[in-house]
Structure formats: C-alpha cells, structure tokens
Length: 317
Image 1: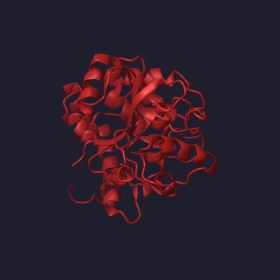
Image 2: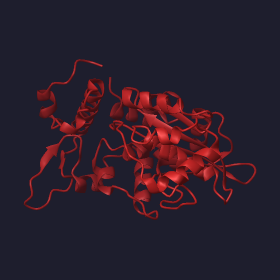
Image 3: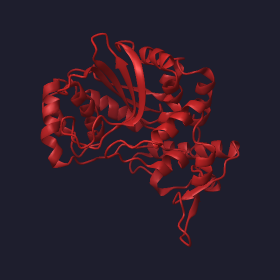
Image 4: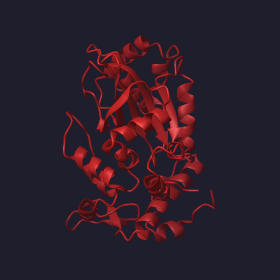
C-alpha cells in the first residue's frame, strides 16, 4: 500500500471519519480510511453526488457531507450503488420482501458505498440471475460442494428467533442452495465483509445452551471453544457458523451438506487473522472456510465485465 493518506487528503473528499480509527491497529485504520477514500474517488469519477450523515437529513437538523455515500433519493432512483443489472435486480427483489423478524437497513444498502450487504449483491447478483452460472461458480470456488445450485438468496436466515435453528437474529449476506441427488439440500452460507473491523462481542445468556448443544452435536469444535469465543472478536463468526450447523441438524432433515464462508478483502488484516484463529478452534473444518474477494474474482467464474467493475470499485492497492 502507498503512503498513508493525510487528513487533508481525506477531508478534501469528505472522508475524515473518526469511526475509521481502530485503536492499537494502525494498519487497519489506514486500510479503512483508504477504502472510504477509494469509494469517494469512484463516486466522483462516475459523476454521482455526495451523500450525507445522516443519510436522510431531518428538516432543519444539522448534516454533513460523507464522500462514501450517495443521497438516498438519487441512489434509489438510479440504483448507482449496484454495478450490474443482475445486482440491481437482486437488490430490488430482496428489498421488496420481508423475512420474519428481519433487520435490514434499506437506507444503507442503497446509499452507503461501503456497506457490505450491498457488496454481496454486486458480487453475486449476476449469479442469482443465472443459476447455471451460479452452479459453475460455486463448484469452482468450493470444488467439493455436491449437487446443483437451485437458488441464491440475500440477507437470509432459515428462521430468526426460531429455536429449532439457533434462536438468534443472525443471517447470511448471501446463501447458495443446492439440490442434492438424495432429495435433500446443501447450502453455502456467506458472510461478506469490506470496511468492517473485528471487535469483541458478548453472547446473550439465553442463547448459550442452544449454541452449546449445536456445537456438541456437530463434533466440529475443540472442547470449550464455544464458550471461549464469548466476549471476543470471534463471537459473530461462531454464531453464524452455528446457524449453518443448526440447519444441518434440523428435524426436517432438509439439509445434509453445508459450509459457512467468510469473505473479506485481502488487505483486511483483522479478518485474515480472525479467520485463522477461528479455524484453529475447529477439529473438523469441512463446514467452515474463508476466501478473499480477490480470490473469488481471480477464479474467473464471475463474468469478465462484472469482475473488472468489481475490481475498479472495491479493490485498493
């Protein structure tokens, strides 16, 4: 990566944000600042107007420009946060439905250029439109995946607050469903990250018994691993992995194969480190993996024009 961006450079594009600082991790601080700056450059290069904080300013209330955002009305009218017709189509389809108990930030998915759920639509929207293409992509990225891709969903949970799964609000940014030869289904549940940093989280006590039960039945964890991640930066990864494992254990018998995948940019030292440490807690890694955005693009499965647009939009350094 080139020389650190100065405050003056960042302020010139409305990108000086206190939230980008990661205490004690200067590499992540610089990476987050550079991602924001890159998105502002992309916005300006494409002639899009600058957005604000808050995204929708209240009448007579203070607001300030944010270079990595679009005005919400403009974003909804143009679909400018989405790089292809497939991505926009997938975003429109998802925002037109409501899964039970979902928490979905409609403003950020349209107007925040750094928002990872929007990146998920851009990465996989073309695949949702063409299931044959999705099938080739899934079997290129995860060659041991069985069956044939039959659906691609976004911001999806099999059941929020449903104790037959995990009883939580966790969801996958994207999910590839596969038809298997025996009539059951497989799933690749994907967590997409971009500008995020890892930080400690605390588990809700009400969910711990169920989480321990799913972990023990899976046989995938070292002893005490589920409790060890509480109050650490690995908790969210653990909860989303356990959500997938709860699907494989569901009484319906619907799912017989699954994998939880964390996707992140190569420059994110936080997620590279977290995924390595999380994998070390597993005795069986068949249901967990991680991959960089660059590796997904380099595999050659996403249409070339889309891959080029994704690299220009999201990859720095």
